[in-house]
Image (cartoon, rainbow, N blue to C red; front, side, top):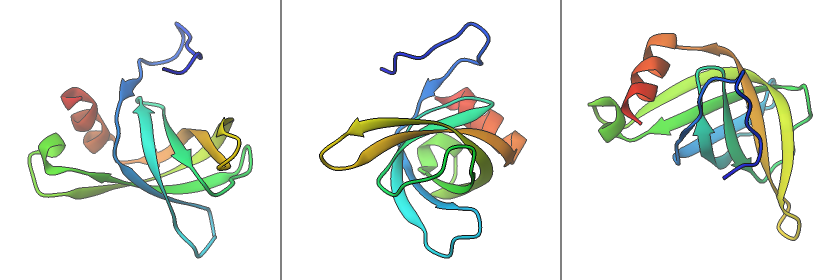
Length: 114
């Protein structure tokens, strides 16, 4: 569990699904795993560095059990707001992203099921 919480933030829900991400404009996608999600953002583990306050593109790979269909992808864009070193030896970090663009109906449906 992450030590950061605030009564002003929307509640976070644990979500462990695969995620593809890249800095906006970068041609290469990287793979990570989500930790939690809320209406305003996402926390995920990443191996590739992202710049603080940088724009990022994200694709969440959602299993069918969460959305009553086959596997689907939720595409969103955001801004990196937080970087947390998780494993110094392996270089893995947690990246907190504030959503700039996301399909609101799909996000609400997802949050209601987790």
